[in-house]
Amino acid sequence: MDPATLLRHSLSVQMRSIRASTGHRCLRPRSLRLRQPISRCIATTSNPPHNGQSPQSDPAARSEASSAPKKPRMILTKEQRDFLEGALRVNQAGEVAATLIYAAQTPPVTRSHPHLRPLMKHMYDQEAGHLDTFNHLVAKHRVRPTAMYPIWHIAASFLGWSTGVMGREAAMACTEAVETEIGTHYNDQIRVMLDWFADAEAKGEQVDPELKEMVVTLKRIRDEELEHLDHAVENDAKEARPYDPLVNVIRLGCRAAIQVSQRV
Ligand SMILES: [Fe+2]
Ligand SMILES: [Fe+2]
Image 1 (cartoon, rainbow, N blue to C red):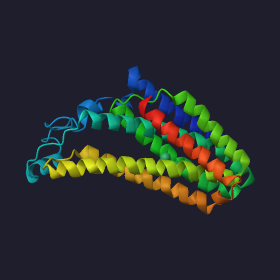
Image 2 (image 1 turned 180 degrees about the vertical axis):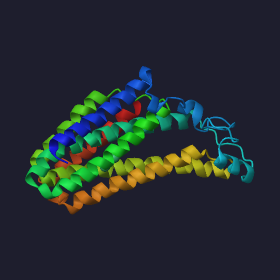
Image 3 (image 1 turned 180 degrees about the horizontal axis):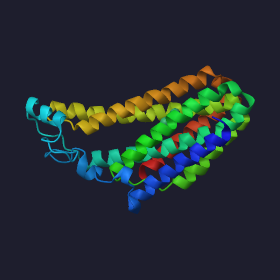
Image 4 (image 1 turned 30 degrees about the vertical axis):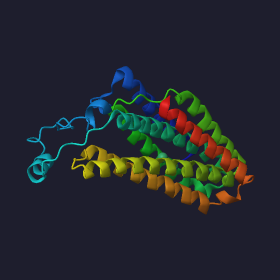
């Protein structure tokens, strides 16, 4: 993808993000209907169904209902609901930042290293897919997007542009630093949710399929982030100069952004 097309794609992704955020408050686009706040939908009640379909109209649910032993539903506590809302908010913010970083890095990096164009496009496309996923989940569960969006927009674009201008190795070191923090961050979320499931199952409760599906999604995205980390190391991230200060500052910034975005 040439730089102009990439930037157009980036802008399109950002506009979708903004529309989803705005829709949270008032517009409610038809494709992102806001019908299931976390406080109402994910296992906060012992009375299924959670998906708006009656068991009679859903063959899979009918089959499950007839074959599964009747267990009480796992009910999320307020702390668990708060955790999920914070997780979706910060994940959406992180994926906005990731698309902006790659969009800003790609023109300077591919200008001097055209052979990296397919790799940069591949990583950008995966980040755009992650952003679509979290835009959908944020809108579906009526999670408030981060109020820090304008700040992260500027910071991520600057980080991508500056490391891209510094050269291929610095751009890859940036990817290595960001993906190390993001991979750890997704792993932490997955571990917390699997602990919930284990506790629920120990108590004989049934875990909401929607929660299980969310963990599958997080694992897939975590694996793709770690794939980006591998690509960065394979493409000489460790050769960046000065490597340690650059990577440490970016990792620190990522950790701070994650903490802030969970709350603000
Ligand atoms: Fe991502
Ligand atoms: Fe990534």
